[in-house]
Image (cartoon, rainbow, N blue to C red; front, top):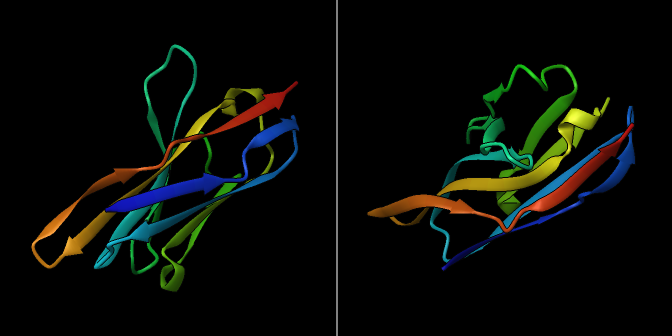
Length: 120
């Protein structure tokens, strides 16, 4: 089927930067929207940023101006460059892709998550 594998999480001090990567692999026919979501302890999963196949992006207000989402379509890979990190950014970050495995079948796929911890 389809697998999404994230990398790049870790521990960073407030004000620091991290870059997350997510590569989709498997029986992929096409990839449309890819994005990043996060879930902090005791909170619901929330949108961080998404990017369409044509490059259009959308960001949560909390990360605008600090995070940048990008993608390499040829590699089915999406990135999240995070700068100016704050303790409130601490969460498990999940990669998401809306992926077609054939002309007639498409669905949402999720990565396993990567922990980002920002110390004050």
